[in-house]
Length: 316
Image 1 (cartoon, rainbow, N blue to C red):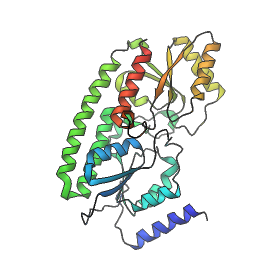
Image 2: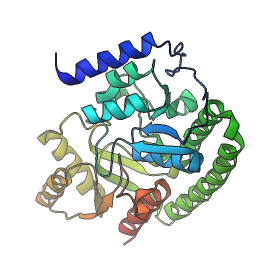
Image 3: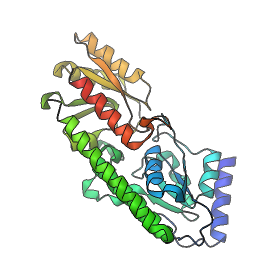
Image 4: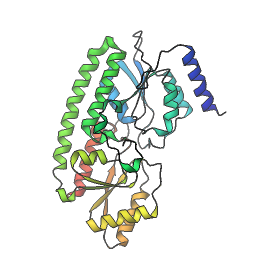
């Protein structure tokens, strides 16, 4: 038995013995805070979720993000250090919809110990995309539609107000301010997208992460890999995408911060072999934000960077 599995089993056994409470149908122990000793210890799987939690929680929360800049959540597996952080958390926020597929076992085991919440649970299933190639599952990249991410923000707000009712007015006020900021962001993305003529609104990226973006802001989206990066793109995939780009004469294609650039460079070379040249229009943030402490290291900064890069390249 490896060390990580031993730790997981030991944590689960200890939490059950301590009688942490029943697990609700949404996957989190229905616990409320029994004291006000220090900030609430919170772990978020992705930087986007951590950013929401810091904005809503303010000084009442201490948030750790498991996945930093450039990390691919589709392939991420919890380390022993991650398990320790998760076991010490009072509340765990994750995306859900199988985004953190490599962490599913760990998150399931933590349900009996901590309040474990999928922010995607706040979104009506009728608003989610379910591409046929994803075998009946939903597309997890909900943050690319700002309106859907507003629902995720409300999920964080509601969880914190229930868990720590003594500070509920702080959470509600912080959430109201942040939701207003997201409303302005939504308007900005719409106005920038409108700058691109409809015939030129074709977004080609390394993997199929931008379908919510495309639906929300009127872009046709093509990705070399599927929705999950767990599957490799083959030569036939590269050639098919290159043929599409050459036929449509798409001026620019985009790399992603969490996926090796060589995947898009292979497409670019295949397009050139067909007698047409497309340029790399820039790097987009897809499954991870930018470096902490930079504008792109926030959700709003990431979204602004993406739309500015896309419109700048497609309108040249």
